Image (cartoon, rainbow, N blue to C red; front, side, top):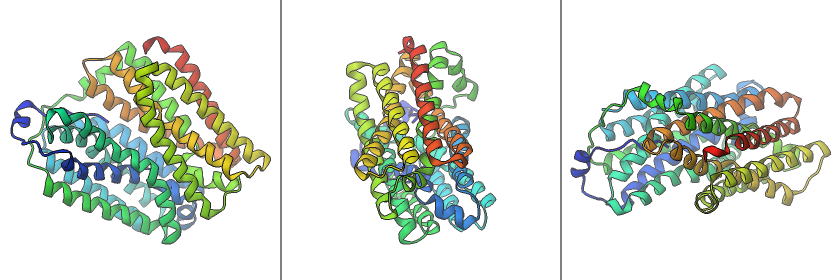
Length: 397
């Protein structure tokens, strides 16, 4: 997540408000994260309702991710001078309207259009939430404030998809998206009520943001984010049919998705400490190895008809942990490659994450007609390629 700096003059106008004031921003990032990934929880039902294949329905996640990746640096440039409260409230309202539109979509093209609109709202909100949070607290609490806001995204990873699956079964997929829209409205009202009026920031030209891509270290490291997230998300959007293929009954799907989310939270938290102790290359190598073995084991279970809830649960947790252990380590490498441009390289990494998610979902959709086991195996192959690329670029740690 790119942290756009609040100017010193703006900081002087803000009385420190404590970490509690950042919780509403964390709720906003939770809404953004839930919106980004909730579709995977009710994909089969949505596909049936819109009369498209599951592979086609999964591309709605691709469209969201690709639009976010492209729009994030562009919107950061275009909205730099807007007052922060107005920008954040407006972004959440756009996200809410987009989700309401998705819930009411009569056909697939309308759904895709509303997913693009949702991505624009998410891309405008997420990078600015961290910067604003750091400005609302005393200097000694800024790191914790950022952790609170990022925690909203992490919790969404753990809860968004299983809650979407649960809501989709208890109600329907349209009601689940309507609930996300309502959550966005609540968050917008909370931000408007709690946040002070903050001025905008100096404008950083788009060409300056993208100039980081010309740095050899950044150019070598950043593609691994795309490749690694592509491997992790090749079958993520299709996790419900994959679980069905290994014998998990519908009531057990939600529990398995919770295990994935718990693994994601644990992997993200452990990665930061492990990177400080053992270095980013070792952490990433371990993550990609676990991802390759876990996805290959899922593919083998589908191929052999193996049905073991315990084994499947372990594999789901390992998949989640290996997927989300990448981000802290990759950010560490990028910051080392461009230590004076932390905000810009972290922003580029966020775009690369969503680009990888989008490309991985496209790849998964292309191979899904050959079977869920083949799709999981394809993800394992990409994880091996990520491990190989890491070996080639390890000197840039």
